[in-house]
Image (tube, rainbow, N blue to C red; front, side, top):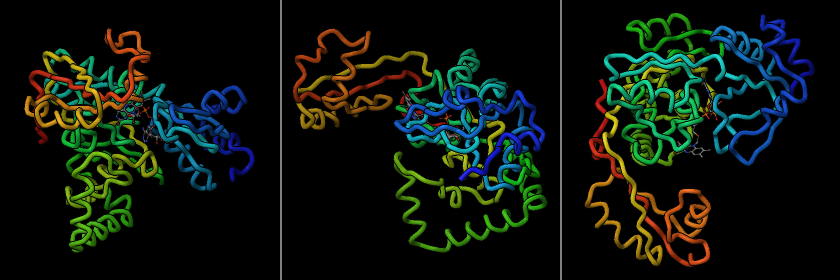
Length: 345
Ligand SMILES: Cc1cc2nc3c(=O)[nH]c(=O)nc-3n(C[C@H](O)[C@H](O)[C@H](O)COP(=O)(O)OP(=O)(O)OC[C@H]3O[C@@H](n4cnc5c(N)ncnc54)[C@H](O)[C@@H]3O)c2cc1C
């Protein structure tokens, strides 16, 4: 339950009147994202920098008011909506810095995947995560949802390509996990958090069942919840924390900037759609298609094909009135990328 007057609380925290929106029209405009859900925020904060976010989360935490970050708003499960305080972290967070001749990139959370890739293109590189929503989704959402996409699998998703995060923790503490002294800094500023992460790391590592379960679950793509594989993949609490934030849906920290290793961009790309009489026949030809080493293969059932017929660029011959039990294999090819694995430092 939100206590009355989140506006007063936010203004008292140092935000200016034009940053705190609570007119019905402003709240209604942010009541939905790309999901089926609808929640009208009690107030909307337009954050201008990480200090504004720190002010907002510490004031709300002290008054038991929930805070949700909203960036591109393309999430499919209601991650970007709330009935409490919603913070717009897209508008003023769009800076992008290409590093090491394009082999890495540091970006603020409001930059879209498309904008980042446009700056990397002259270097023949791109981000590993390739969500289909790339024109609208942003780095904040990509990190917080551990976004992947059709071609990046689990080897080049946000978790695997992440190098460092600049974080604002719920206490307001700032941490740049890319600094050589990041772990000492975390121990100094957040001793309980640092000790807790070490304790959890050792507990997970000492339990053979946990190890087996984590390895099995995180080898595949559709694993939900916190990225507890971070306890196996990283030793230092600062690195563990950075990788736990990936996929945490904004519940652990605000991502003020993220640095990623990039992957080679394909020089040539094409996509084939193989329509077959049934799902069984589509499954039967899979080994043969896989042997040609495409970037990925996506199985489309009749329902998906029906939707595809509505698109302006639907292939000629794919007509809703002739579809019955067919299935299709969508097969992208990317020359220069097939079977590549991202080289992390
Ligand atoms: C047509 C369509 C296709 C899609 N295709 C894919 C796909 O191929 N692969 C895939 O993985 N997803 C896909 N998605 C889902 C979604 O687009 C992605 O998960 C995307 O990365 C979300 O980014 P966003 O900027 O829209 O984040 P939002 O929806 O605004 O937020 C997502 C989550 O991130 C949190 N968050 C946002 N910014 C920050 C920040 N700075 N710090 C901390 N937390 C933050 C929010 O609180 C929320 O929990 C698709 C969605 C659509 C509509």
